[in-house]
Image 1 (tube, rainbow, N blue to C red):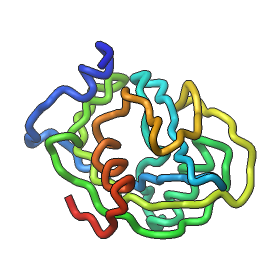
Image 2: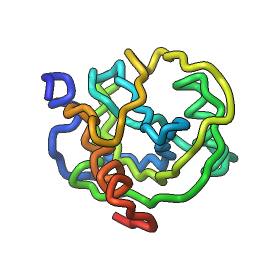
Image 3: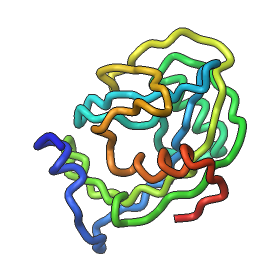
Length: 158
């Protein structure tokens, strides 16, 4: 892990100042079944598209919006994969403002409907990876969801 990522994802315990953020994470598959990952601009590591659920938004609406904002792709949600909240790998310090956040993510699978792949300010790169050749530098919050997906597991609550 690079020094920035080490600071962001350093193990820490939640305290009274830790905020909980509920978000949607999306495993986007192309027609070959390859997985879309984005190289995050905040830490230089690979992660899944997704982000916070805004007030008044459903989980599906948030997932579709976040994928579009981060990738330029319009997707259709195809299934629920699981809910991930284990504080061991999901308490993150955002270095731009110092916020310590416990990420609770609802993981979904999606297929591409339309659009053209384009990076946003949140990413350095976007790439589809074969399931057997995923990069080694994946952000900690994405590790368990990807591992479960690759093992064919759904209905996960962690």
